[in-house]
Length: 352
Ligand code: SAH
Image (cartoon, rainbow, N blue to C red; front, side):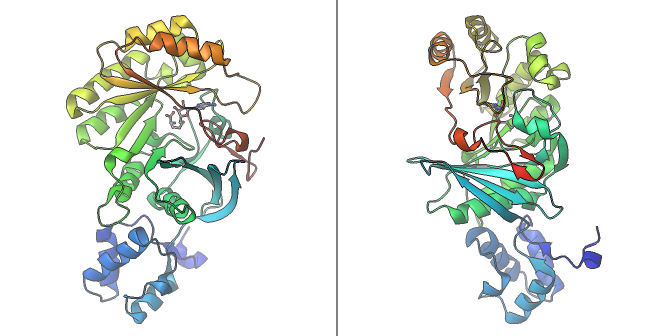
């Protein structure tokens, strides 16, 4: 909708240094004002244009009339009982809701960002899929989640994972632009190796990502070892098979020299057999990679997490493979902030 008609202020978050410079020029200001504005938004994380003291008052007044810093509105925060994990519910300007998660560990402060409202992929074990797909988030709406959570956290955020709601590679351009803003040495300054993009396996985008040579980490949600079974829980497998994914991962490695992390959700009687572990080892043989095993987090009764013994058996079998194995015991599952538990239904977030 036309901003003038709605008289809505345009958010600055999401704009690049050159876009901000261009904007300042429109107000007759020299180039360096754009750098100052960029610094205020991304480095100082100032949310109020009028507090950007080194900008001339006349510029602040004019900007404030038509622009605002943030595009998100915070609706709710839920903290886990340990206080280690907090889930943030935001509204975006068009009214939909999204969630982001802040996970504070000893050395690592991670934020999990959403890239879409809902998701189109329909993975049967993921709560976000139940919402269906609503829309892609803008660059600003993605980066603003980070800025909010950084302002809320006493410690500096060390890692960003694009593993919230949505499929990042179906919002490719904006997700890459958001990652670039997070990485910008004049702004947020997060190392490229501290930013992970996770995809369910949109193969043409994996190839494009390899060709473009981005340095952000790539994770691929494998969650299966046999096409027939994987297609049942991840319908996207009918379009891009396990073999297609593995070929693109090999291509990615050859092109960039970086390794992919395969995520593997352990679901009772679906993905957790010793046969699966053996097949996984076989499939990944000779491909430099990591495997991150994620014990399933429940959100309804459709699937179960395997018991600890079975998880251990699976891991023991996997550990003799040619790759590094890690386990992600999701944080904040009691406030539905774990992997695959993010969903907003009827405008409210799901809680147990
Ligand atoms: N669409 C992207 C990113 C979002 S999901 C992707 O598929 O990679 C982030 C991770 O959470 C994925 O590895 C996904 O397989 C995993 N996941 C989804 N639902 C889960 C659940 N209920 N329990 C544990 N992990 C889950």
